[in-house]
Image 1 (cartoon, helix red, strand yellow):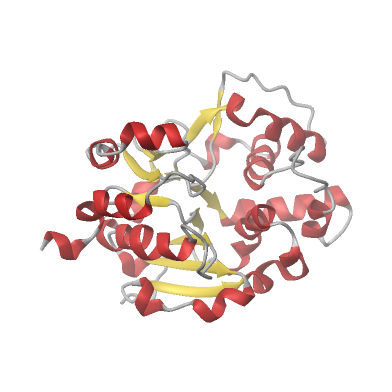
Image 2 (cartoon, helix red, strand yellow):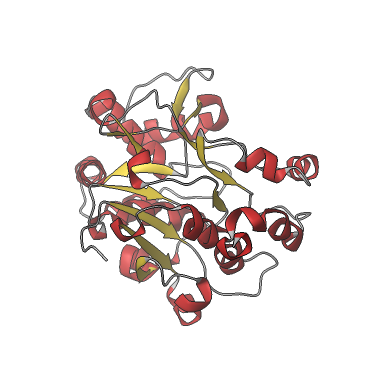
Length: 297
């Protein structure tokens, strides 16, 4: 295998079993098989897995099917230090920024355990005209996140709810820009402990004070020229049709293959991990022929 890392996947996850549809099962049955089948040039991509320290015992690369990949495993303590004790979702957000120092490539893709790679891709597909591509959504989807993050960063910015903005996971981040953001946050909060400064803003879930992507994109929009760093009109999109709600699941059940895998303009789809009515075994059975190589041989 080549020693040159051209691109990096970053995956914060849990590996401890016991929950109804835990991350470990999603990795083992869906995400990693879909990567194994559809990811081209694996030797030039590194997968960074970050898990809670207490879950590391459950990491089994053979069982997870990781032997075809270059990978490194970190604990949350390795990446965010004392901030490992904050609430899970916010911890994952910090991890996606703090891991930049371990990334060997110029850019990295953030992943979650509920993603599925739907079509064959190379790391080159994440770029167009040598610039990474942006996944778009409307500001209105997460308007309060943008407003609160802008206020926290001291940016006087108005957001048109109906205009497009960069989306969330999966997202291609620039290592250079994330490091620039970290330095900007240290200057803004007047402390070297930028993660602590963000963590102290978390009071409760009734008001989300910031998100990692709003921090990143607002920094880029206000301190740089986004068109210099990103291709804002990509021919492909990172995320295609997905299952976000119980209603989506019931509507698409039996048609997921047609919805997810028959179009080549997108890379990933999501089956949201918190759907109580989701029959995980039925889902795996329905999509198995599309994500497992051995079933197609």
